[in-house]
Length: 482
Image 1 (cartoon, rainbow, N blue to C red):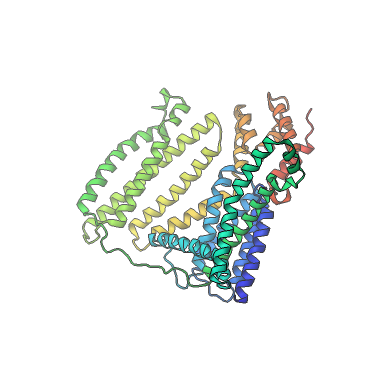
Image 2: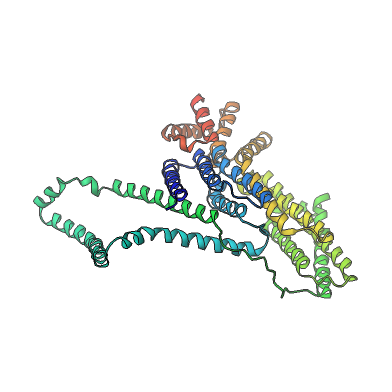
């Protein structure tokens, strides 16, 4: 074995041991940032001297990974906590694959998805092959008959273990003296703690094996990447496109006329409460907006551009469709705002607002693409999605929700105490702030007493350190409930 590979194995085992120490039996917090740092130290050490490619998208991915990891340490948001369990490892894998390629990669093409799938299969196959290496080495150093005998002995042991275990239990039940004799043996060997230690050992070995296999493949020449484009792409005739767009724009023009009555007068709102109006059609408007965006992108990608006479007409109709979609998006946002005024702010409603902002950015760029064909839609969509999701991770969404609800309480004296209590540590901090201003609010004192008791019971390890939860514990400790 080469010295470099031996050092890599030793380092991967060390990182595996540290991963078990940092991550197992601990809530994710500071430990995620530390483990990601450990991995990248190992990665860049092994890639020393290797020319790294695709640096622009690589830097963007690196910042996204940093923001997602920091979210575990800075805030406590259960939605992002669960999403990042999948997205964070995925971004790390894509980032490392992209920058270690020998050539530039069209990461915005569908072919890259196929390439990542092939790479993952190669990674798993390589990891499995490493498991068989000790067997091959051991077999090569023994005579054929001796090796066969050893295999049969090992097989016999595996077959006999369950038989001995269950037979022993029956004999212990049948004879109390035999049971007492067995109890004199080191019974802790049969305790579940052994199972726990074996599980920890298995975790270390799996992490070490995956890290070693992953870095080894990245260090070498991994799966080839094809950038061939399909020749049999479907093209839409201009007449068909114009007919469809005129029909849709006519329908949306009528809808927009009705919407402007909502925007600038009370003509139709007079028969409805704000809550009824807000509840009606929000998701339907979002879905229609997404359908329109899909139609615009499909036309841009598949339209036959040979007819110079039809192109300006189609571009104008597409632009009109994007404009109508923008009006529907604004209408959906207005409905959601009214609903929040009636019922308060929640994580789902804040995320819906953020999602609509992202759709608005996407629609704006799509409008520009209609007239400037040289722009790349897929690149912008991927980059804007990364920026959007990374921004969600670096913003204290729970803190924003709490502050919005407290501001609403100052205006309407309406507040959902139970929701703030359940939202996270930020909700508890908001309740403490409210208690200092209004200690006589019904149910507030009892909620804080409950939070104070739970904070005293739940001790947090340094691996799970989280700034918001730390602020919550300190604020509850200093709080004097009268």
